Length: 180
Image (cartoon, rainbow, N blue to C red; front, side, top):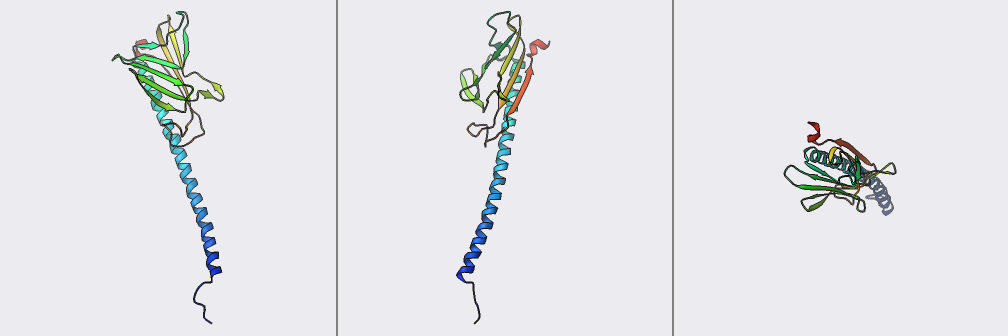
């Protein structure tokens, strides 16, 4: 008797082997896509965070007046969750860390928007203040230190995927009026 095809058992074994191989292949492809998405999200979040800090630094360098002012004229440092800047064009810019939503919000002449998400302000479990303003004679701003701790998070507009690494951004800026 000449055999002309496969038996049902042979076909089922072949399908089972193909299923196992394809499942492994799809799992490998999915983990590769997940790793790419995670690294892209962290890269986007890092870039966005750095650009935002540079933008705030530019506003401080070119600003004409700042707040919050010290409650007492002899106080030289103010730690704050808010930074108020008046630009040379007269725009009122207020940057606020919203601790409830863990976002950094910017208000320009009454128009408020979230500019950065995942701002936890915890560095190694220790709370940090986003803005430190150093004054001279109670009203003359010498320096602003910006200190942000950002975690990439899928629930915020600046991240495409979840991340685990805290991004720590710190800079110290002087208004141009103080440089001359």
